[in-house]
Length: 234
Image 1 (cartoon, helix red, strand yellow):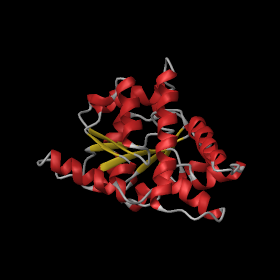
Image 2: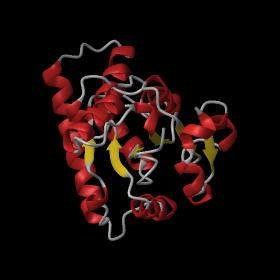
Image 3: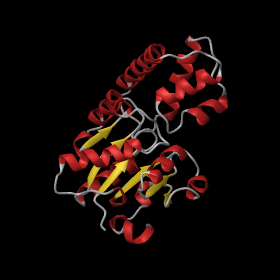
Image 4: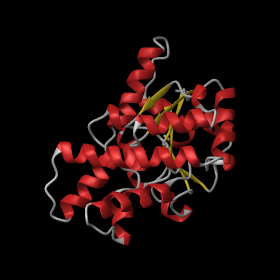
């Protein structure tokens, strides 16, 4: 089987904004009279959707969380995120990822974003960074009921790509996933997809134990090796 698609995580892979998300989650919790503990963001939020992150933290703190309350918090956080990005002249996009996206495009492989971020956030960044045209599909928090490490988002991306391109007959094993967190790597593996861990968020040695491949920068990942991914790592 040959490689047909590359599926990208968003936060920590395309845009270097984990520091901003942590700051905004901290702000949302502060408005609810809660202090974000240092270990909580890494434990409950990295690689996961805002919904899951906030739900888990609030539940851990003994707060009663219903859907309406959670939606209100997410809307506040999303609005603050959008305002922050609109005020930034140059988005903190990973340059190695941009170069890699261009190389994947030249190889005529399909591309999708699979993320726990809100669709409005993803589209804002991709449009502002002139990357939107590269991606045939975006699977965001709005599209799935579960968060990584569940595989649902990645499996939905395959379904949507097959609907859009009826002749592709895409299988999970014909996709390559680019991830930066433990939850994301686990989701890709549960979906039956080979995964590259890029050391944007965690050190190389921590991701290397989990991912099929690991690189410090996506510029280190040779395109010819990617094109042979099924022969090499499955």
